Each structure stands twice: as C-alpha cells, then as structure tokens.
Image 1 (cartoon, rainbow, N blue to C red):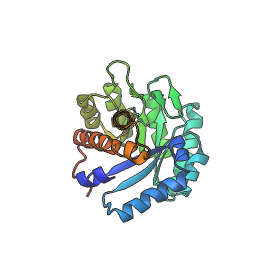
Image 2: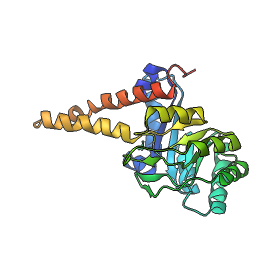
Image 3: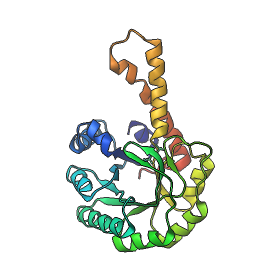
Length: 251
Ligand code: 13P
C-alpha cells in the first residue's frame, strides 16, 4: 500500500485462505488493513480480495468479516455446480456491495492450497457463467500458471480475445509472475484488467531475507532480518505497475 500510494495507483490486495489463517483469520486481516489505511494516510482505492475460495461458506465468512471482493473458485466442480455455487456467492455479495470473480478451466501450477494441471476455459461455458451468475470479472484459464514457470509462458491470446468479446466483462490473469511484459501488455489490450502477482513478490522478499541472514548471522531481532525485504516487494510493485499502466490512476 505504501508503494501504491506513492505511485498513485489503485491496488487489489489478494489474500489466500491459508494466508488469512496464518495472519489470524479474515477479521484480523481486514482490520489490520483498514487501520493501516487510516493511520498512514492511504488515500488510493484499496480492495481486500479473497483469492481462490472453494465454497460459498468461505466467501460468506470473508465478506461478513470485511473483505470487499471475493473469488469463488468452484472450477473443480462440474459446470452446472460451479455456476450454481457462483450464483449463490454473487447474490450474497452483490446485496452487500461486494464484487465477485470466478474461474473456468484450470490454472496450472501451485498457489498456496491450490494445485492443478492446466486446462483451457471453453468460451461457450464462459458466456453461460457470466449470463447466469452476473459475476463482475472472470478468470478464464488460458495457459498461465501459478508459481515459477517451467519454460516461457504461452498464453492463449486468440481465446482471450474471443472470450472477452463474448462476455464483455473484465478478465483476470492468474499466475502473473514471470509472464514477459509484451504478453502482459497484449493481455491487457484484449480485456485483462486484473493481474495477480504473488511469486515475484515472494522471491524478491526472500532473496533479501537470505542475504540479511547470511550477512548478519548474530542478529536476533527478526524485524531487522525480515524488514529489508519490503524494499524488494516495493521494487516489484513499481515495476509491475509501470507495465500494467496503473500509475497515476488512483482517481
Ligand atoms: P503467481 O504466484 O504466479 O504470481 O500467481 C498469483 C496468483 O495467480 C494468485 O491467484
């Protein structure tokens, strides 16, 4: 948030189910963020988004505890069940002013608790999902992967364009770390408006952490070892926002 404030870019803070649990639960997460916003003069738009929730109950709990956006990922279910679950989440969320993202196909790789083999979204199913549920944005799996890519990522741009033309709502790109800038820009030009970046931030942070531990073997204050890694995250955020074109768009 500090870096985004400096850059005057809006930001979506994505939290995984396990990430929230690690931090003490959804309520702790939302109160921490909301208090930080007030006490540190954060004026940019900030969304608090639950990433990859597998059930209606999980989404409900996060919404009840202050999340402003949720992703229902029922993509492991058969289509009809995925749509029914998503619709239930949308009905609950929209009546409270909360936005909803859903997924079709399978995003490959590993993200916290989510592990899957890649499988492309089908455009007819995307249209059905959007028409029947009224979701706010759609994450169609089109070759991107969570975590570190083995080889160069190859996104399905033709399908991305077709799906966006069909559904007419913003698309979401998961597995945003490690995708070359030209592919990111192309995805944006074809309707992608939310890009998830986690692994790049983690790698930058942990690289500095390793250096700090190596250079200060006698340090016992964890803040002094962990703290410098923040700069690594800030650098990634700045670099990504430059490519995403979100700098200066806070208003
Ligand atoms: P990366 O960790 O590959 O950046 O993916 C993040 C993501 O898509 C979270 O859902």
